[in-house]
Image 1 (cartoon, rainbow, N blue to C red):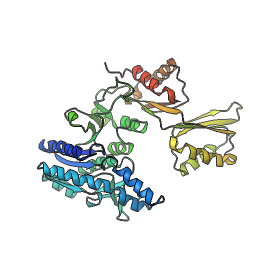
Image 2: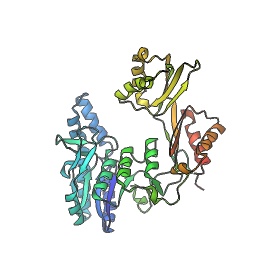
Image 3: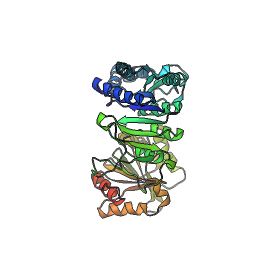
Image 4: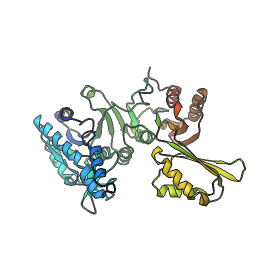
Amino acid sequence: MARIVMKFGGTSVGDIQRIKSVARRVADEVESGNEVAVVVSAMSGDTNRLVGLCREVAPLYDAREYDVVVSTGEQVTIGLLAMALQDLGVEARSWMGWQIPVRTDVAHGRARILDIQTEDLIQRMGQGQVAVVAGFQGIGDADGRVTTLGRGGSDTSAVALAAALGAERCDIYTDVDGVYTTDPRIVPKARKLNRVTYEEMLEMASQGAKVLQTRSVEMAMKHGVRVQVRHSWPEYWTVPGTLVCGEDEIVEKELVSGITYSRDEAKVTLTKVSDLPGVAARIFGPLAEGNINVDMIVQNVSDDGKSTDLTFTVPTGDVDKAVKLLEDRRDELGYQALASNSGVVKVSVIGVGMRSHAGVAQTMFKALADRGINIQVITTSEIKISVLISEEYTELAVRALHTAYGLDAA
């Protein structure tokens, strides 16, 4: 007997028929002899509708009351799924975050999990009862009020619950049947990976792959929770998904596991910045205070040899805010000109095999050069190489790199 956490997102429980389908999948797991906890999101579209109501009532709403409203979507889903399971003869009970409890900090709207008290859950699961748990929500440890976890909250809830329960794995059911070497919509020859390391999955998630949220992968890696990505449609129930696990579980590691891309990039360039100590801190300090995430950074000596040109990327939605912050401080920062460009995309090559193989970067640069694609910015880590290119070359670049690293399916 194994203890399993199953997580279903909003599209998987988007209507009554899909909820009944999820109930049948959970019942199959129970019939296999496993102890099961299920984490579900709100029905597709419900959270956006609730957020809209909050904004309509008060644009500058109280974040604590916001959490009260938006957390109700999951309450509906867990009740309906528990009923559907009971209708199949499976003993089940719904649990809201505060009933377990899932204790969080009090950063309402973006809370982080501090602790999950699972004694009652474990006892009931051992007696054959399925725990149907609301994702995305908890209770503030300091104020005792309902909290929500923000973007990717349900995936994070599921992985955290699996860690607290000591589960064998956490199965995350979504609208794809696993993690692929790249986006199959761009490269039809993309292959599904049987296994991928936490580090690779974390890089893929942070560099544009949308299969799993970054926070949930971080938590899985921290607690050693094995995560399996599976398709929620019935015709895929017998199809193995992709297991996200520790590097020691993968016998033969791929040189490159995946090619990702992110269109949510904008480039900002400051020319002829004073080449003095502390200038970079004065530039990036205001951006950090404005909660603007800076990603790729490159610095070059200007043609006069006395100043420097600084280029970096920010999320597309933040570029206007970043430009204004920097323009307001032009005299203080001492740059000559500022330019921004949203027509760029970040393409990344990811693989733990890079640690022990040379020539990975050269292969990337040659493949892009052979197709006439100019590289604007380069950044690297131990298992990743990212380049910034013009957005119009996105699909060409992804296809070229996928072929160059031998990832095309036969």
